[in-house]
Image (cartoon, rainbow, N blue to C red; front, top):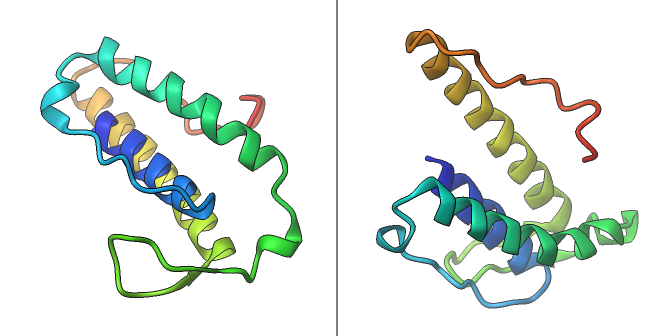
Length: 112
């Protein structure tokens, strides 16, 4: 699931930047260390774009390569945020079921 989170976030934000989807293969990221390295690589690429986000981008139209539909940039950005929060909740539930300390769902203070 962590690979999925990283891949989806990167795919959408990369599409907002006008870049082609890299579509990494799950079979190439079978360890948490490899997924973490991919996440770190993607994060560096995405941070610059997100740092310059402005309200002017909100209504710009996106046509991603993997769908025939169009979306506004604002809609896509909110989808990515909700997607990540959804999976934080899933991971927390699974951690509790395994009697492990769940990941905090609090996003304040994380430097986001």
